[in-house]
Image 1 (cartoon, rainbow, N blue to C red):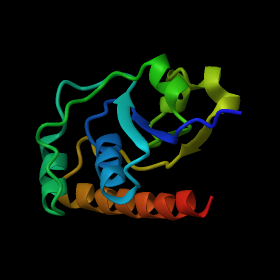
Image 2 (cartoon, rainbow, N blue to C red):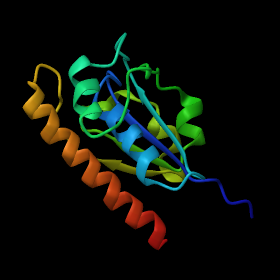
Image 3 (tube, helix red, strand yellow):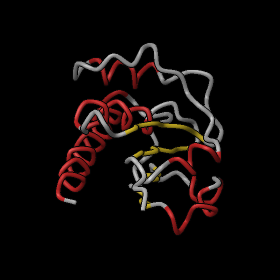
Image 4 (cartoon, one colour):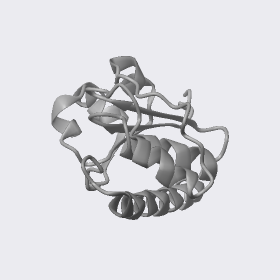
Length: 140
């Protein structure tokens, strides 16, 4: 039996804030042999400038990151599908991989229209969830 390499897909609608932060923290805290990608069902043209600022405050440069469109190939390649909690579960192609992929919804508040203080709180929540995920993945 061939074991699929761990591949984590962080998804939200715009891929302009929460899923991008999750991807960045995952690169920081998860083992290098895990493939980490973020994408959106309707990606924005750029990452939120306040998200870039909030992440820079914790030493992560996201200024060169770009929103990406979620594809069926990304879903098929993933072992873990993590929605940020923005209705993406209803609008993405995950059902075709439902029995072959671990699916979670982190139910995080959207950063759109929020001030930098609110974005920092969401950032810190995402960082903690990634640290928890790192523990969970190393236990398995």
